[in-house]
Image 1 (cartoon, rainbow, N blue to C red):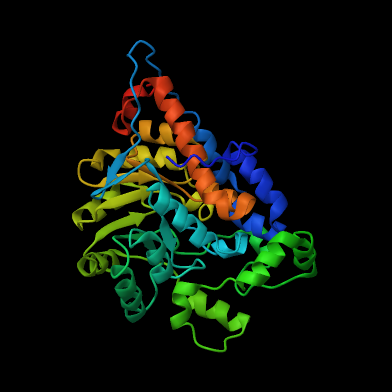
Image 2: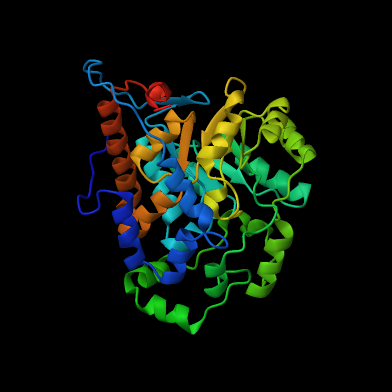
Length: 380
């Protein structure tokens, strides 16, 4: 295991607090916030932490093994880095930092369609092991062009299902991070108060939707870019679109955002390989239930499809709680972005080490030898 570890920031909460001081307020609000009143954002974590685990102290001296098989690859831990849009807004080069750290530490990294590095660049950094999350475009021709690039570089395609409408995020609207974005005097003052971020961003260049650059008409001003993005990527899905993707994609196909038995049964029948139970980190539907509650709805299909989870996980104990609740793998987005926002180039590796150390301690405490065994330690 990589032993690089910054003892000044021994948890994701410490990283979050440091990131808040290091990046402009509008960038932190974009990362940290959710939609409407942000109720579901809090529920995701608080209701997950209601899950209790039961230790067996006389079970012998078992050495925990965090290695977890998923889609034919054995990862070193049962968690991965979830896709996050506009990562370069939070910290310049954040996508590349996290992709490289994930590859070195042998955990999955998933690239968003709308983040700030290209499929090809991330594939190079991960030797073709990164996953790709697709915002389904309106036009099949554009979909097929993106799929071709992903198929040449990524073993797993994640289809995003929970963005039929863009979330109503008041903080982003107030800060001018709606489409088209606007730079207010308040935002300029925030940037001036974060000179390290400003210099790094100046040297790195303005964040761009790197994967989408070949498809964006040249010479667009920000207003027309906003209109183009809203028209081109509305994210609306139906069964025909999912079935078409299953026919076209020869690798592993996962759908993210499914939370009902009915939808799960439909994608099982279409032959998908996995689902990620998720509510988009509370960023889409504030009135939704927490992800750990939705997980219980679809566990009956675990023998037919891989069932994974994200939204609300912030620590190694949270990973243990989710796995004990029935998830076969877990993903986190904000946690890793806090790490990069706080520590820059070392933030990805440090955050992975935090989570591995925390999870190993929980497994030793429980007497849990394998990640497959977590459901045996839940208080029922």
